[in-house]
Length: 196
Ligand code: SF4
Ligand code: SF4
Image (tube, rainbow, N blue to C red; front, side, top):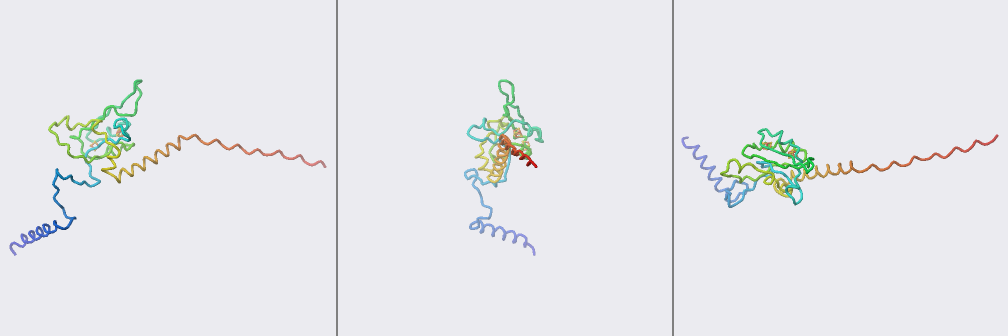
């Protein structure tokens, strides 16, 4: 019958309209930006660097091994390892730049990092009129605390904590000096054979 599809469509609209008043599972309008959006835990956009403790740069987990730089498909990571006054590597990045205008959010840098030092962020309000410098993030912009990591990815961060704790425990056990071997039992001398 002519107009059946139209009536069906209107019925769906009416059902959703009425349901939106009492069913919290239905999509509701979020008054963004006044009302912050609740993102799913697995949402990700661009990487950030995790630091432990209170000092963002000194506490970075990154050891500047450059694996992520080598593996990033669009080559948007740039790292210069730091060195001490004698020219020895400090295992910290002196420069860690990430161009988020090029990053494709693939998470490969996270997958390849052996130190759980780089993770995916959820911060998406990065719009800027400065196409080049505004979207080139430096070490200081990328450093975010482990507490922040826990706040955006609690399940994943708890798993990472367990892995790091286990690795630390194994390293400490390996570094412990081996217990001295027990002295060999001294065999008492055989008694002399009785005279016949
Ligand atoms: S983030 Fe990870 S993979 Fe990248 S340089 Fe630092 S330690 Fe290496
Ligand atoms: S998410 Fe992908 S594209 Fe972005 S920095 Fe990491 S490896 Fe590169």
